[in-house]
Image (cartoon, rainbow, N blue to C red; front, top):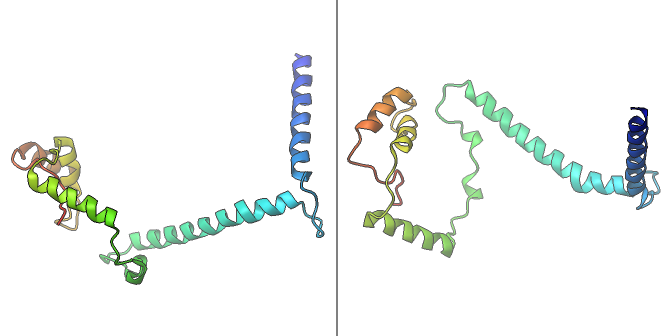
Length: 152
């Protein structure tokens, strides 16, 4: 219908005019750039670009390390100096209660499906186990269905 097409074109024109007027509402700087454009570049685009560059660099390091056979690339780890030795009182309190729950036996049991995940990604060996092997181990495990976590 031609009337619908005309209405859509009129709506599109009004939207574009509205957007343009909002970009021009803060005026133009001496260098001829829109003030709104400058603010958007400084407050939105440049911080995003800096963060994207950091993530891209980290990804490239990770991707490069995936093909190597070494167990650990120290350059990928943060410096120990960047880790504060100060423990907050809230963290100490939470850790205290986690330790209490673990010792009391009140910690919730682990489901067979969760055991399957834990066993297939165990840190005991350098290789992850096949899910079928882990599934059999999880089905046989009737004794230790407690927490997989240790709060020592």
